[in-house]
Length: 172
Image (cartoon, rainbow, N blue to C red; front, side):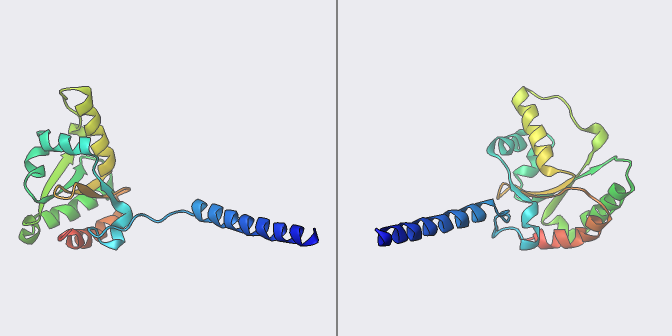
């Protein structure tokens, strides 16, 4: 009987260790999924665009011409009374005036005070809201891959990175 209890004790310990290892591994924060299409430095700032939003972008007057053109398009918001936003907008304008970037990108400044508008139905309005949430304060949309890169919390540091971001995403 003594051997039986020793064997049972060993089996229980092994299962306990496996259970603890499983719990520890499942509660660890997971890294953002790696994508072959977006440079590793920006992987945490990328998102797949949901199919309903893609269909909305293909039809919406302010995006339809850009979505079907096989060029990425950068959306950046203007009109905010924030010095950091102005610095960021100026950085994007400098890139937008560069002919080498004009081959790969369309640039869409959107005045925050002019946002909103009329929608054909509630679903269209919801898709517009969902897209704006995905885009955050600045985004680059890749319509071929139905993905976007975004920056949340635009400031001086991000403004300084704008040329590198556009350069790194040129072939994405």
